Image 1 (cartoon, protein in one colour):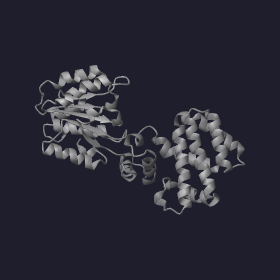
Image 2 (tube, helix red, strand yellow; image 1 turned 90 degrees about the vertical axis):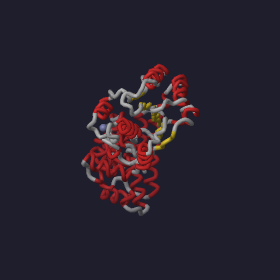
Image 3 (tube, protein in one colour; image 1 turned 180 degrees about the vertical axis):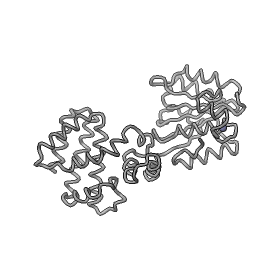
Length: 323
Ligand SMILES: [Zn+2]
């Protein structure tokens, strides 16, 4: 499996492919950018290509089999043990890196979440970065490069990764999950350009429950006291998913606002709920929609600060239904 398996990041991949092709692979790279967008996957494939007997991550040679199994003697992966990467781990890595390359293709090391290196570990690694042995390639992966020592940063060639454009992610999700384009658009939008988030455990929430939740919320009014009470109870019971659920409500109210302002359907996230959006927009004024958005936003802030969930939900639904 080569770079063709990666969604997006074309420029970064081109840079790496060029480096391999012209034998100008740097001794140290820093792959930085937000979590969950595929930095590590790119690094792993880059390593496979370098070690592959056919220089292509062919997936058939011994080298590819060994790297995939995590048992290639020239491939080393370092990740946090507990909440940090410790100096012992860097020393163990250095002991490996001084050995001759088993395959003759070099030795590659991936350090994931590099910002979790303790100061001692970082200082130890610095020595290796300052005097890189021929044929050693180190890739630091980090979503918080600002935490790394400037001396480390200056030794690495930086390749920055960004979130995938929602459209690109949606296209991919459409193929990968065989969901409808409308559902894929929602999933891409709510997952903020992160593939792992989009493919993660909350898929069911965004694809199935989202519609039910929005319908239930829209059906509430100032006079439906019992339904409002029951809905509040339900939300309180969804403690673990509550922030995501509130995010869904916020996006829905934003869609209402966009529609109210005459934006085209393509600008909206819940494109599969257009009839409901239209119906709501006819009933609501712009200030009313803004009040609802603010109510959800405030509830999310309360939850983030661990303020009583019961009060926060009651207050939010009161604001929403009385707006
Ligand atoms: Zn191969």
